[in-house]
Image (cartoon, rainbow, N blue to C red):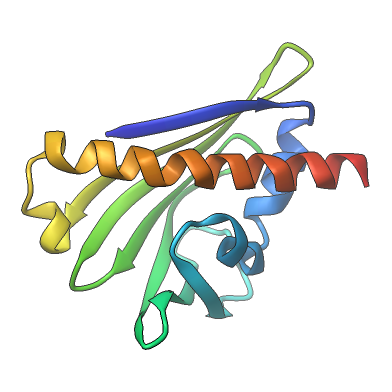
Length: 146
Protein backbone atom coordinates (compact mmCIF):
# COMPACT_ATOMS: atom_id res chain seq x y z
CA UNK A 1 0.00 0.00 0.00
CA UNK A 2 1.06 3.56 -0.67
CA UNK A 3 0.27 6.01 2.13
CA UNK A 4 0.66 9.77 1.99
CA UNK A 5 -0.31 12.21 4.71
CA UNK A 6 -0.06 15.80 5.84
CA UNK A 7 -1.20 17.95 8.73
CA UNK A 8 -3.67 20.78 8.14
CA UNK A 9 -4.84 23.49 10.57
CA UNK A 10 -8.48 22.42 10.33
CA UNK A 11 -10.91 20.06 12.02
CA UNK A 12 -11.77 16.54 10.84
CA UNK A 13 -15.25 17.93 10.09
CA UNK A 14 -13.71 20.50 7.71
CA UNK A 15 -11.81 17.67 6.00
CA UNK A 16 -14.91 15.52 5.78
CA UNK A 17 -16.88 18.35 4.18
CA UNK A 18 -14.47 18.27 1.21
CA UNK A 19 -14.70 14.52 0.52
CA UNK A 20 -18.46 14.57 1.15
CA UNK A 21 -18.82 16.70 -2.01
CA UNK A 22 -17.87 14.52 -5.01
CA UNK A 23 -17.61 17.53 -7.34
CA UNK A 24 -14.27 18.42 -5.69
CA UNK A 25 -12.60 15.13 -6.59
CA UNK A 26 -11.76 16.40 -10.09
CA UNK A 27 -9.57 19.07 -8.48
CA UNK A 28 -7.62 17.09 -5.91
CA UNK A 29 -7.38 13.60 -7.48
CA UNK A 30 -4.44 13.58 -9.86
CA UNK A 31 -5.53 12.30 -13.26
CA UNK A 32 -9.22 13.07 -12.77
CA UNK A 33 -10.66 15.09 -15.62
CA UNK A 34 -14.20 15.59 -14.39
CA UNK A 35 -17.05 14.31 -12.29
CA UNK A 36 -19.94 13.48 -14.59
CA UNK A 37 -22.66 12.52 -12.09
CA UNK A 38 -23.11 11.17 -8.57
CA UNK A 39 -25.64 9.50 -6.35
CA UNK A 40 -27.59 11.95 -4.23
CA UNK A 41 -26.74 10.01 -1.08
CA UNK A 42 -22.97 10.42 -1.49
CA UNK A 43 -20.93 9.49 0.61
CA UNK A 44 -23.19 6.74 2.01
CA UNK A 45 -21.99 3.16 1.66
CA UNK A 46 -22.79 1.95 -1.85
CA UNK A 47 -23.03 5.45 -3.35
CA UNK A 48 -21.21 5.93 -6.67
CA UNK A 49 -19.93 8.77 -8.79
CA UNK A 50 -19.11 8.64 -12.49
CA UNK A 51 -15.88 10.28 -13.57
CA UNK A 52 -13.46 10.77 -16.42
CA UNK A 53 -9.74 10.06 -16.05
CA UNK A 54 -6.91 11.18 -18.30
CA UNK A 55 -6.68 13.97 -20.85
CA UNK A 56 -8.20 14.37 -24.28
CA UNK A 57 -8.06 12.51 -26.57
CA UNK A 58 -7.36 9.61 -24.17
CA UNK A 59 -10.07 9.67 -21.49
CA UNK A 60 -11.54 6.77 -19.58
CA UNK A 61 -15.04 6.92 -18.13
CA UNK A 62 -15.64 4.85 -15.02
CA UNK A 63 -16.97 4.93 -11.46
CA UNK A 64 -15.86 5.12 -7.84
CA UNK A 65 -18.01 3.68 -5.05
CA UNK A 66 -18.10 4.02 -1.27
CA UNK A 67 -17.10 0.89 0.66
CA UNK A 68 -16.90 2.42 4.16
CA UNK A 69 -18.24 5.77 5.37
CA UNK A 70 -17.48 6.84 8.95
CA UNK A 71 -17.94 10.62 9.17
CA UNK A 72 -15.82 12.58 9.95
CA UNK A 73 -12.89 10.19 10.24
CA UNK A 74 -12.76 7.63 7.41
CA UNK A 75 -13.96 7.14 3.85
CA UNK A 76 -12.97 4.07 1.83
CA UNK A 77 -13.60 3.90 -1.90
CA UNK A 78 -13.24 1.38 -4.65
CA UNK A 79 -11.83 3.44 -7.51
CA UNK A 80 -11.79 2.40 -11.13
CA UNK A 81 -10.06 3.49 -14.33
CA UNK A 82 -10.52 0.27 -16.26
CA UNK A 83 -8.84 -1.53 -17.90
CA UNK A 84 -5.75 -0.03 -16.27
CA UNK A 85 -6.60 0.31 -12.62
CA UNK A 86 -8.97 -0.85 -9.92
CA UNK A 87 -8.01 -0.05 -6.36
CA UNK A 88 -9.04 0.68 -2.82
CA UNK A 89 -8.42 4.17 -1.43
CA UNK A 90 -8.82 4.92 2.26
CA UNK A 91 -9.01 8.55 3.35
CA UNK A 92 -8.58 9.19 7.06
CA UNK A 93 -8.88 12.38 9.07
CA UNK A 94 -7.39 12.23 12.57
CA UNK A 95 -7.41 15.11 15.06
CA UNK A 96 -3.77 15.94 15.83
CA UNK A 97 -1.99 18.88 17.49
CA UNK A 98 -4.91 21.30 17.10
CA UNK A 99 -5.51 20.31 13.47
CA UNK A 100 -6.03 17.19 11.41
CA UNK A 101 -3.72 14.55 9.96
CA UNK A 102 -5.05 13.85 6.45
CA UNK A 103 -4.00 10.47 5.01
CA UNK A 104 -4.54 8.78 1.66
CA UNK A 105 -3.78 5.06 1.53
CA UNK A 106 -4.20 3.37 -1.85
CA UNK A 107 -3.65 -0.13 -3.17
CA UNK A 108 -4.11 -1.57 -6.65
CA UNK A 109 -6.49 -4.54 -6.53
CA UNK A 110 -7.37 -5.14 -10.17
CA UNK A 111 -6.99 -4.07 -13.75
CA UNK A 112 -3.56 -4.16 -15.36
CA UNK A 113 -2.02 -2.50 -12.28
CA UNK A 114 -3.49 -5.24 -10.09
CA UNK A 115 -1.48 -7.84 -12.01
CA UNK A 116 1.79 -6.17 -11.03
CA UNK A 117 3.52 -6.81 -7.72
CA UNK A 118 2.81 -4.27 -5.00
CA UNK A 119 6.49 -3.26 -4.83
CA UNK A 120 6.12 -2.01 -8.40
CA UNK A 121 2.82 -0.15 -8.04
CA UNK A 122 3.15 1.36 -4.55
CA UNK A 123 5.96 3.83 -5.41
CA UNK A 124 4.05 5.09 -8.47
CA UNK A 125 0.81 5.45 -6.51
CA UNK A 126 2.75 7.18 -3.73
CA UNK A 127 4.22 9.72 -6.16
CA UNK A 128 0.81 10.56 -7.57
CA UNK A 129 -0.78 10.83 -4.13
CA UNK A 130 1.92 13.17 -2.84
CA UNK A 131 0.32 15.84 -5.00
CA UNK A 132 -3.23 14.58 -4.35
CA UNK A 133 -2.84 14.92 -0.56
CA UNK A 134 -1.27 18.36 -1.02
CA UNK A 135 -4.25 19.52 -3.10
CA UNK A 136 -6.76 17.96 -0.70
CA UNK A 137 -5.01 19.63 2.23
CA UNK A 138 -5.15 23.00 0.46
CA UNK A 139 -8.90 22.60 -0.12
CA UNK A 140 -9.46 21.64 3.52
CA UNK A 141 -7.41 24.60 4.77
CA UNK A 142 -9.27 27.00 2.44
CA UNK A 143 -12.65 25.68 3.65
CA UNK A 144 -11.61 26.07 7.30
CA UNK A 145 -10.61 29.71 6.82
CA UNK A 146 -13.60 30.73 4.69
